[in-house]
Amino acid sequence: MTAIDPGTTRNRYRSSQSRSALLHERAARVLPGGNTRTTVHLDPYPPYAMAGRGAIVIDAEGEERIDFLNNYTSLMHGHADPDINNAVIEQLSSGTAFSMPTESEVRLAEIIVERIPSVEQVRFTNSGTEAVMMAIHAARAYTGRPAIVKFEGSYHGSYDHAAVSTTMPRDAWGAEAPPSVPYAAGTPQGVLDDVVVLRYNDVELAERVIEREAGRLAAILVDPMPWRMGLIAGTREFLGRLRELADAHGIVLIFDEVIALRASYHGAQGLVGVTPDLTTMAKIIGGGFPVGAVGGKAEIMSVFDPRGGKPKVPHGGTFSANPITMVAGYISMHKLTEEECQRLDALGAYIREGLAEAMDAARIPGQVTGAGSLFGIHLHDRPLTGYQSWEGTPEDGARRSRVAGALFEHGAVLAPSLTGCLSTPMTETEANALLDAFGAALREIAD
Image 1 (spheres, rainbow, N blue to C red):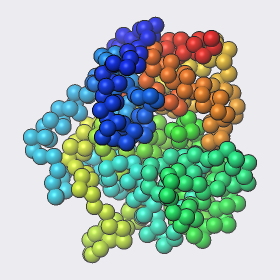
Image 2: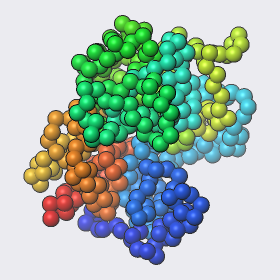
Image 3: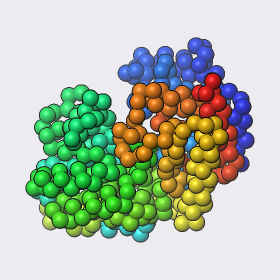
């Protein structure tokens, strides 16, 4: 049980002499911008984490907050879970990495294959970015085609071909079809030429463009519940039609479930009832350690098979399937039983309903998305279909930032996009603290 008073403001890190401020001064001398992860940047500097226990994260000033971000959804069991810690400590005494496979990767692979409908075989990587990259490589090798489809506003990591049109310039919003635009400066034109960008949940556009481009398409890459779009879910019609188009034209359908895997015991694909050819995973399957995986049909996964000579897609990685991550991931997934998923589903529904009621009570138009242990807050009542409906106006973005900042100061950590997630240490105590903090944040933006 976590006692957090949302009436107490937590902002000591803002002092110019705070430990966080001094740490940032040191960091800026040796790290570009003072950080290694763009996602943790905050102007003029972020608070620094000191420790975490269960559902609580403690900053460098010693102030406690309930962590509804959980290192961007990766900490299914919160901070410093004792079962995961004990398994890792035991493995440490036997070694951290070997130039040989270990039983630990077999055990984690078995639990993933048993649980995720689309996965017959799996291959481990060290990040979600790498998992997506290897899935695209596999689709190209399997089909002999160069191009992929992805969707405007979806984030799939930093691999060149996946990092296209992650955001979209406003002057392109009215285009018949979204253009391929680089997320990172220096992206080669050849990369952009091989990425066909579509609008999320736009069935008619998907049908027209995929039919036209099918001869060069290796893969359709889609997140069934994109975090970067506030957890707007793909409709059954949309995802089902992508499955039909992929089947009709021999295209590999890839579900990016790096985050959405925690939407249910069987992942988001288990909720929507659409089975992809490949699934990319990360976050919760690593138990808080660096991890990624691509899994799917054995026929497609055979492109990685080195038996008989060089595989179609060579894949190494010094720390891929290292036993520290594998034992942590096994315990993480083993503890995430179907019963525990059902409990988190109910707690997530309680939070989503409570957040919506808080906006109603404050007479602020809004709606809440998500499923299972995931939730997203939208401070408007426009129909939610995809990136543009989520992004909204610059004023919408400013309001999201204000609410996220107010929540943080009232003891609840969410993403700046107002998306969040649960961890297994949480109960209605933490849920009610979030709802109280949200009510306080809404009152502040109304002033």
